[in-house]
Image 1 (tube, rainbow, N blue to C red):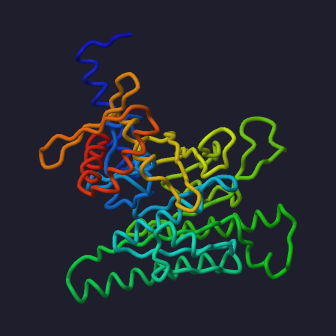
Image 2 (image 1 turned 180 degrees about the vertical axis):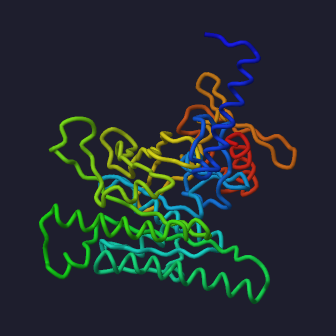
Image 3 (image 1 turned 90 degrees about the horizontal axis):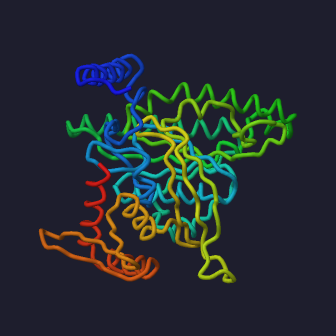
Length: 371
């Protein structure tokens, strides 16, 4: 039924009042419309994942930039070899480039400093902890937050200015470490161990959620997805640790490996293509999905991710087999025109690697369109 103009006006007012009252009663972002126009900037700063395409479906800060939100807890789940650790490393690199501190709670004792270094992390400034059991890892997170708050207070006392340094804490993973009781006993029945694990996490997240929300800290926890063959209906995939992370995370990101990247059908793989879907997002419309190309030994492919983001935002024109990107540097028009997709991506890569000004101009155009 088509409403008259007056009824449409009152309906729009009703929607606005629902969102306004929801924000007031339940917190910003509790109620939102599933449209880009309804997005509000709810965070002061974001950290880039290294993929412009992925950044665009996570959160937007007050500067108009997209990425992982500061002041929030984020959950990253997926099966093995889906890119969870690579994403954590990429975020550590980005926060260091912002002048911030990167910390990693690594529970599977499989951290490769050479791989992190190859992806751009300054390992000499990386805070690393490899706890023996769950409570030790959670206590380390609390210690990091306590010390960060102390540094912030000392800085304000000395300078009279606000502490602008961000900190990223990666917990990789909450599934890969036993509770203290299980660690000391040597083994538990599966059901008993999972119940204890879930209770410890639930208590922990209740304690730190409000503290993180008031600080320039992002806590990202990875979690392993297991297949439960006992589930008869719906998805058989379950996460270890109960519902604690699901409830307290502002964003829950589900990673799934789609395929291997190869030069040709019979060639050796040089990377993987992973899908990333926001199964929960309190900062932007949820249920968005992008693909992340990850190159072995290099990490997330920025050029290919940038290309995907430009395509998704209709900033690359296509005339038959020719791909065209128009951008401006200080008012001067520039055009990248290349036949066929693969050569275009290669030329885009050369352009942004050889010209920081062109890279900045293209990124600026993308942010403006996405906003």
